[in-house]
Length: 192
Image 1: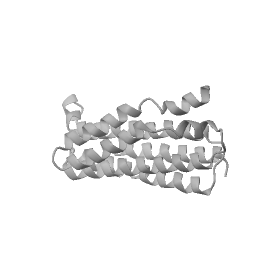
Image 2 (image 1 turned 30 degrees about the vertical axis):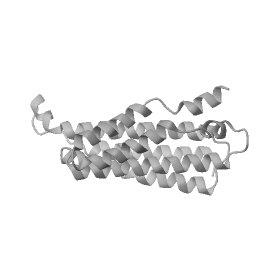
Image 3 (image 1 turned 60 degrees about the horizontal axis):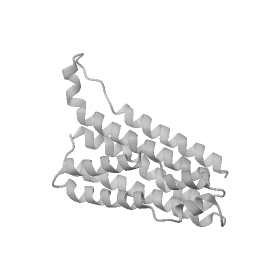
Image 4 (image 1 turned 60 degrees about the vertical axis):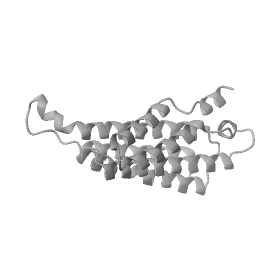
């Protein structure tokens, strides 16, 4: 399989995930602004998940842009990532439907952590199979501070979700804020 086909497949899956998430947002029966207030948790959950999917799409694109070769391990690692991302609509809907109750917020954090670990596995496999001197190998051979911070924040969020769900959401939002700017290591490697 070519790298382009892998990217196209992943783009299609991510587009479907976003579509499924937005279909969970039902308009209110009333036509007043006050009728929107009960949708606050659902809309926030959707926006957070949309941003997270967008971050994965952006960084996935950068990651594959830097890859010269892919193999069967990459295909399976990519499917592993897409599996966890495909569960985001479930976590998003459950968390929003129950106005950030403890268990749904914790489960959402588990999904975020699993996707982050799957992305890390994909990146490591891609780096390992790249030829010596490839920009991707050079870029990702250094410590991933943002990735490490993300994993720590997800674990912290999951741990506090049962006691203070809004603090857990704060951890998840902080990860999104960290990653809104794509991984600079890859961009720097391409400009050298």
